[in-house]
Length: 159
Image 1 (cartoon, helix red, strand yellow):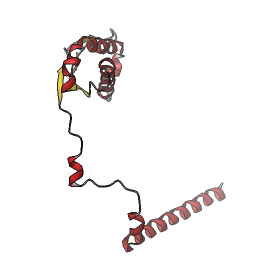
Image 2 (cartoon, helix red, strand yellow):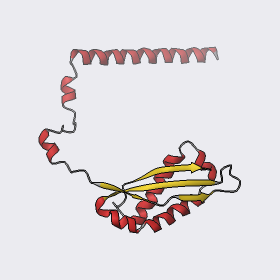
Image 3 (cartoon, one colour):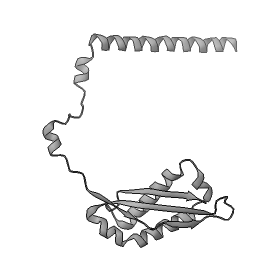
Image 4 (tube, helix red, strand yellow):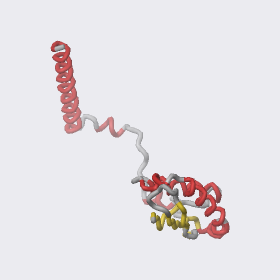
């Protein structure tokens, strides 16, 4: 067993010396400018000039469509009995009226999802991130492609 451990230590020492030599050689090559030509030949994306910025697409104007606050009853065995949730949908202004007409259906989907959740999952540290992504995806499915760009959780209170 002593011979095997000595061989392992020796291999580790050789690997450490080799790593230090490679790192030192790389540092020396960069300092001397030996890699400048190689770096310039790398395929990098072109930098934007002032003229390129003029052809960039303009930002889409958005507005927020508020949804009615939800109060959801949690499982009887949960230390919290109720969840109060208030969200708003960020939508392009061109689709605001269309999304506003579908708020009833969006509320139904959100309410159905929230009542199916395990109440213990709501107290997890990442609960809001998961909840936000799930609610956003459901709102996007109801409204259609490109109608809802984001979902904001404005109130999340466990009673």
